[in-house]
Length: 168
Image 1 (cartoon, rainbow, N blue to C red):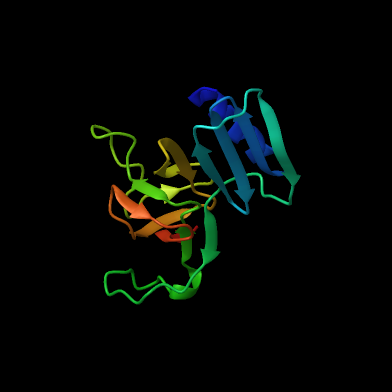
Image 2 (spheres, helix red, strand yellow):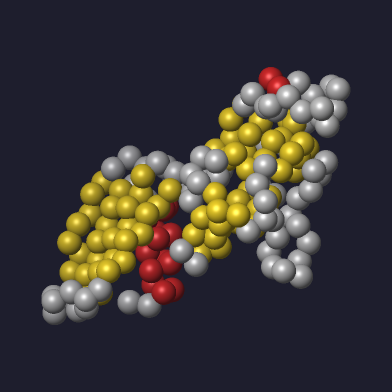
């Protein structure tokens, strides 16, 4: 099983209601588990099985997209914020997974967003790299970036705040 086949399997699990699948081939085994808004991968080798088998398929309730969690949050008081910005209307864009946060697509590319930029649903705001997969994180609201909470190329945790957005 090559890397592209594993990626396709992850996509299929993500789009379905399958909660977990394990595929075993000669000396290779991959388990993909889907819980809430993230997919876990466990890859191990060598195994002593000779025939390919699918050993487990569990149907569990699962969400279909690893979109960022966006929740109204109480922003910390900051003297640099505009006078008309109140903590009650700020939305926090949170990381949907564990990985490395990147503000741009490559070293010679511009940042996806800056403080003051307008965003709309579907606009890419950052990339989170997890297990050599680069996941584009899109905004889900229309608004203006008030603060960027994470430094470029920093590790992030699941549900960690990434941006503060003032809704339009």
